[in-house]
Image (tube, rainbow, N blue to C red):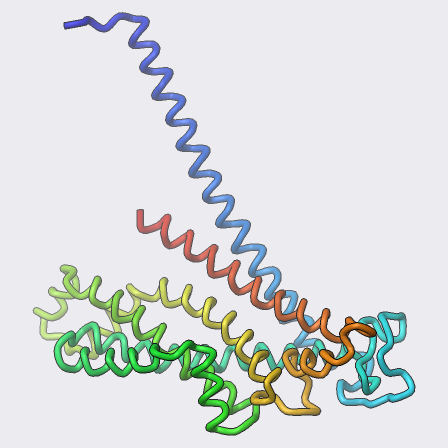
Length: 299
């Protein structure tokens, strides 16, 4: 059997040191990426929220003010983003349209979460008949693409911002239900759940005090993804005439109104499109950062 020499021992220590340096560098890189995604996403959303909240101060004129003599103008000192076919100021309409988009995203996401998570908790805690019935109902909703289901519900409920929010929220329920069920099934066999059950805690107490706090991380990540999808869906429904109705400003409605003038005045489509991309990118970056953090914490 070969004996270890001082040279081989020194070589082994050098290899270990290099591997440790590589591992430290990889960990630092992962942490930096997480911080970059989360900080950038949160900054984008905070800036957008600040602009939208200050619309009453920043907007030069009312978003519904019509000025036919200044229609289809390009960006200028008087109209920072130009005007649409009716002479309405695009900067004002983008700001106020952001209120509609963000509010619709928050309400639709909240509806999907408040309905979907309890369904998933019950289906995971009672995996028998109750769980099967609940999840088969969710499977029925999942049989339709989310945007197609939202369009169908919006058409049935009638056009309007409120109806669009309800339709988008209902379409997002299955995602939360399936996620909550999977996480509940993973947490249910753990020792602290068994201990609480052995001490006589009720199922409601166990779900509320022990299960839900331990599955909150993935649900928060799902909230960001659903919010981004809800903003896109609201814009799509408004573009199709099933969401926000004129003259209320909406990013999707602005795209629909600008499509006939895209060649001679593209600003009416460019700026609402950039605003949608801004909101969706910010929400997705926050979700990616949180997902990386949770993955690192679970290792």
